[in-house]
Image 1 (cartoon, one colour):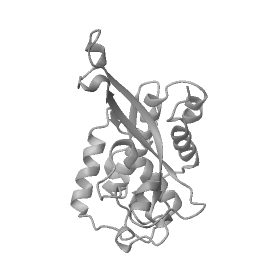
Image 2 (cartoon, one colour; image 1 turned 120 degrees about the vertical axis):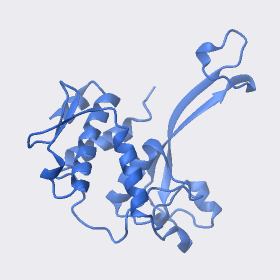
Image 3 (cartoon, one colour; image 1 turned 90 degrees about the vertical axis):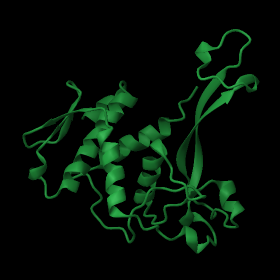
Length: 220
């Protein structure tokens, strides 16, 4: 059975290989970046948030809104012919026999079981739709303080050991730790945090896929 995450993981690896220090976009987009949003305005969460942020930045989209094919039809703005979709992840739990159980391993014979499954699905940015309503093409204004708090919450939750000192930023696979120069060595605190986030991606990649040729490519 093929792994539905394989195309996404390969894309992440390719982007890491194309990256160059200081690991940030070297140009300015016309609009302020925003958290990817669903068609109803709710933000994407988990892996989908950064997967679609990557896709939007790489393709130059300024709209944060993403639609499935049917959602685009529902607002009267069909996907443009030839538009290339981005991939998002769907993780669901289906309860057999209609009864809710927390863990199928705890269910005895004849009891309801909870089946978990994961798959990918295609989404399109608002800028790929035909005659898309203007409301979906506008970039919502976000309070910088709110954005900074959300960023810090993500970085603080990263379960990687951090060692501060020296003049090199890197992820040390053998010791499973991130080494970072002190914050004062950077031009601003945002530069320090963006570099730390980059090294944390290497740490996450090792945890997600800790074997095979891809591991050697990431470590190179």
